[in-house]
Image (tube, rainbow, N blue to C red; front, side):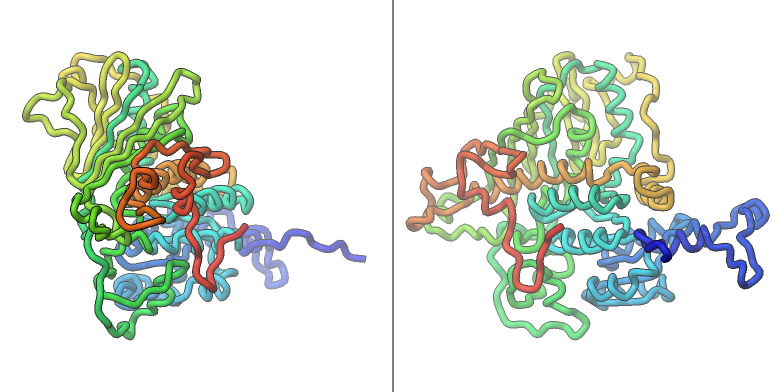
Length: 479
C-alpha cells in the first residue's frame, strides 16, 4: 500500500524538486543561465490587499526587488486601485480579499495588507492560515486582542512576517542602540515621544446626511468587521484615521515609527500602567456633548514599563496634536527638537540622546558632544536593502531562515503597547453609565493597571471594552 503523503508540496517545492524528466528537460544551474538571471523558483509571488494610497506605494517598493512578482490585486474601491491596476496590468483583480485568497491560493506565496486599520487583522490572519507570508501596514491591528492573535498565528503557521514601520530597518535606530548599549547616556529612566499628527479631522462631530454609495465602492466590504454605519464621503479615502470605528488616531499612524526606538532599544516588553489626558472643552463635557466616536484632537499618555533587567521602571510619555514635552535645556535655542513629523528623547543617568521620526539622525545632547565623543563601533547588522526588500528576501529564504526587522513576534507586543495608550485615551472620555455627564467615580482619569498576560485592566473594568471590539455578523477572528 502506498504511503499517504502527510504534507502537501507547495508550488515552490514543485518547481525546485521536479526534474520534468518526462518532457526531456532538466533544471539548469543558475551560473549557466547567466549573470543577473532570476530563476522562477526564486520569485516571490505577492498579492496586495488594499492597493491604493499606501498600498500603491508598498507594491511599488516590493517591485524594486527583481525577486518580487505582483500577481494579484484586491481593493474594495476601483478608484483607489486604478494606478496599481495600470502598473501591474497582468495581475488578477478582486474586490473581496477572501475570494482572492480562495482563487489564488496556489499562485501566491505572500500577501501585503495595506487596508484601513479595521481590516488589518482579518486579512492578515486569513493569509497566514493559508501558509502565506505577510507584510502588514502599521499599526499591525486595530485593537489589542487582534495583535495578540496575529502574534500567535505567525508562530503557529510558520510564516515570515513584517510590520510596515520602515524606520525599524533604518541605520539611525541601530546607531542609537549602539550608543545606548555603550553606556553613553547611562541607564535610561525617562523617554518622551511626540508627533505633529493628526493632520486629518479629529474631535469633530460625527458626519450626517444621506449619500449614495459610489458604484466603484463596495461599502460593506470597506467596513469589514467594523460596526455597520451608513456611507459618508467624509470617511474616505483618508480621514477614516480619526474615527475609532475604523482607525486608531495619531498613535496608530505615527507611534509605530516614533516609539520604535523605545521598544527596540530598551529592555522592556509590556507596560504595567498607563494614564492619559486629552483635549476637551469643559462645557462640552458638562453638557454631555463630547464626541466619543472621533479620536481627540490632541492627547498625552504616560506609560510605566518595568525593566526586564530588574533595574526599576522606565517612564515613557507620548504627546500628539501639537503638544510637546519640555524642551531639553541642553538643546540650543535655534536647534530643532526632532523634525517636522516628531521625535524621541531618551533621558539617562549620564545624559540624553534625541532622534527624529523613524529613529533617524540620533544625536547626543548637547549636540556638540557628537563631535567631542568617540562613537561606538558598528555591532548591529544594517539593512542596506531596506525594509521591503528585506521581507521579500526573508520570504524566499523561508521561515526560520530569513530575517526581518519587525516580525510579528516583535511587532505584536509593540503594537499592544501602542493600543494600550488608545485604551487609556478612550477611557478618559468615558461617560458615567448611571447618568448624564462625567463623574470622577467612572471617568477613566486615573492610572490604569495593566495585566499583560490576561490582557486586562485590573482596576477599572469599564476600560476593558477597548481590549477587544465586537465584530459584526459575517466576520470573525480565530486561530
